[in-house]
Length: 295
Image 1 (cartoon, rainbow, N blue to C red):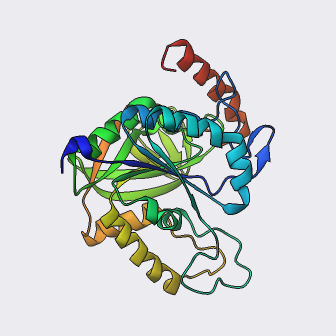
Image 2: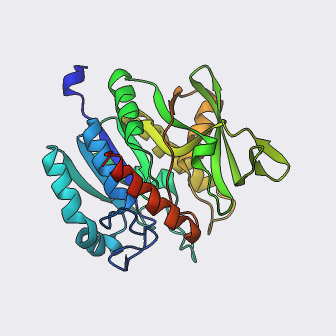
């Protein structure tokens, strides 16, 4: 493929967000000095890195609030970079089976990507709406996607750059052989200590590589993901709570040897509000990013 004409998309998983909250979107507090929220930085960073389509995966019931709070800002950003802005919708009943009685929990991140399938006919980068990944990470991932036609990619963060000072977090530990990812090992309740990140009796060195749900994927992989969802629906253990999670499916594919995933190391520091106590430090971090001329 002519790299100059290669299109790339950014898929933002935002269906888990709530409705309007104090001039923003519930669960995403204003973090920037001018009231910016994290998703604005993500879109700006991706567009500047060269992505030319932004796909927002939301729910229909938050569409009006989302468009009012963020729509015009994101449309303007995309227009400035000659990029498309596309809305896709993740709904509980958008499944090929009857929704189990009493089910209210969303079907998970894997299902979110499937719901955006029509807009993801080009190589695409998946991110969480409420995580800040850092400007250079987008450039690194875009460069990887422009150079790579078959292998998938995964932004590999350094553990210490992803921890909260206010409680335990969930992270997927990345096992690698060279730059090939061999396993994604989900760990919950990781707490920062002087000796490492601790969960239960396990302690991981602070320089351990972890995933923050930033995946470079392809339309061919999306076909696999859709097929895997059919199997998930048939084999659910808990019809009311089980979720089809993107990292878990990628790990299954790695175990089966049906995909190649490359780790793309980044030295950026993750920012996010996992706990309410995180907010002041995150806001201060964004003030410094502005003062340093990053934004």
